[in-house]
Length: 591
Image (cartoon, rainbow, N blue to C red; front, side):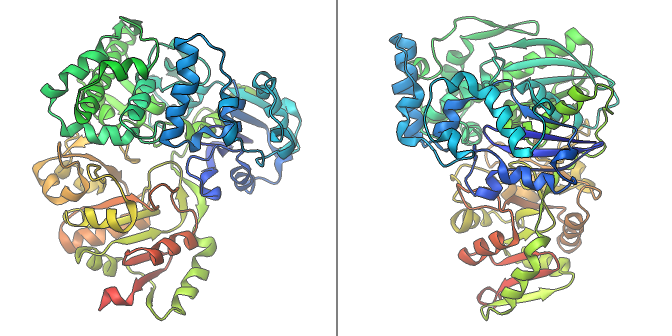
């Protein structure tokens, strides 16, 4: 059986469930090269359909979220700059909230309308009526594109998409668990849910629109001069540099608005909005203390909520999905809670993975007795670099400035990494989501702190306070990470405290202030080729970890093809590039 999932919002993408496996999933941004692409995921859908005979063999199609947002699709809010987001606050939300005016956001952003998106005739002219009709009309658009009957297309609630993805990609599918979802808005009037799941059957016990943790984090990101809906991770990275006592004033402001009554969020003092109210309240508090106060408050609220959930349900196996699950520091705090025995955070709990949740949701909608166990939780489900690797290697062999080493190269790469080389790895199928897991990665020796400014200057252009992350061999977890519950973290979703040995050996891949590591714990079964490379490095150096950061230029999506990786390699000071069975090196770097 085949079920297609579509996320036609930030970030748009598609996924295909074949029987009991997600066999393909990719975000549209990887094809258009527009980060956080929001347009109709035409290329992503076509990619997924390669794994079925044709679209007419689909047993069902799920669209993430019950409601489509015509306006944000029209003016492509995912591509907003900081100035655009500020304009949104001042010209749309302030008049609506504080002046009682009826402001049409689509008219405010008329200069940003995108009329050449699919289907062109639908977006050519603006119609206020489409704000109401788009939800249904989008179903017709998708059915027409797939050439299937409209009755095979169904919308799946946003938070169920988060929950289905988190649960079905967890190692706990055959157990009784609690699945928590928490995000900024949710698009369907909900921003947090709690469900008890047993034998694949979901029983939601709580849903609310009062959990504004994600929304506030997003607006404070903007208040600090960074892009909301994208740069929240920068606020999280900034937070540990402040001292808790200095952040207390900001923490008090945040904690004054919301509290918990058991598993229910309740208002203490509901703010009229999430931007201007806090702009006034936080005036005069230094930027790092605002970041720290916000982060500590979110950690405290999430942890207290989880404690209350465990107490009420009696279940101590917890899964968290949704945008707030991307806050790896908060997830690290949850992992440490004494009441939590086992814990899982899926690889990309934010909205981009809702295409996967929608595919699963469609299978449950159209066939209630459909098997509930997803047998593979691998995120290596994107396009294959092998499609153009040979062509790129041949081009490199004809370039007099380059050296191409064919055949097994793990031992050579290990030696080069130890010497301080920065090497890109673009091998096999691309990982789904916002974190590279070895197949679209930039690698370096994690002990060498001098490598951090080098990678930043040559490729990543990350803010100076932002840490990188390590990939750690499973054989070295106990030596490098404090993880007494043996929590699995194959997708870099939890911040672990490091041991003294771990800090010494991974200093360049840890947060320099609090020494935590957003570790990818690598098992051989998850990526044998990548594992073999780390083993070669460990045999040479004794260090069972590498610095692993995503293969992309700042502000651009992770590379999709071998040619895209090659162009970055050529345009930057990266010394090496591994493509399939060939290692490309720059002669000037080897001399």
